[in-house]
Length: 296
Image 1 (tube, rainbow, N blue to C red):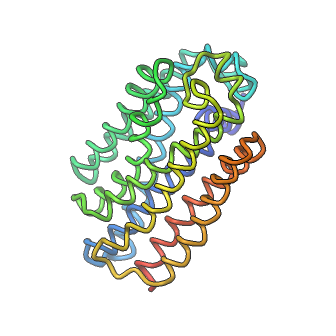
Image 2: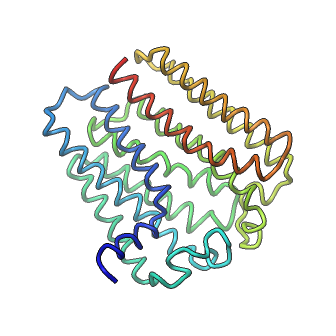
């Protein structure tokens, strides 16, 4: 296998869609920190910092996902959605996946030390929460898996922000928490679509252990909380313009509308649509935050 094919294979192993979103939120955190608390840097300094930050967050996100894939290789082979992943198909050996995951994770923490100890601590916390709390401890034991394990989803934002600011401000906490609040809607809507597979693999996602009515009402609640939370940023003493308000309300209306529709019709089709909308929603919110701070 050539070098390019190997890179593609390990990129596939790293769950590229998830990693791309995590890295994006981390870079957004860096850009917000530059505008909020950091003196205007030279273009050269900013380019170097963004590059190092990008690589660090990329390695950390890839490392965490590969390690969870390594641990979940037995149940991945049982589920139609995951049985074609590199480890279940034998394209990557468990040993090589473990080595890659550990190496990427360790390098990500070391790279964060290029900035400061706080960024490294945030990276380490995210790795421990994702791999230890979510995958090793709760995923197969409790529906709280994505609640407590989902805290790691907000860590790339804090890694990026603290790398530049060497501090955690209310705005940084808001952006990080927004990702954490977003996770239940994203994952539980997928779990409704894939309920039978999760059930067969004995993974106690909320929609697996409660009836459809309870599950869809919970999703409607978390979606409502997400939209409200996206507007709570206005309480932070930053000069956010009507551009942010309009964007947050419009995109939030789509998420809330489909979550209410799901609570009414309880169909897999609506759950799948909500799942597919949730990632673009988070992307839009973060883009608007960055654009608002930099240009409005």
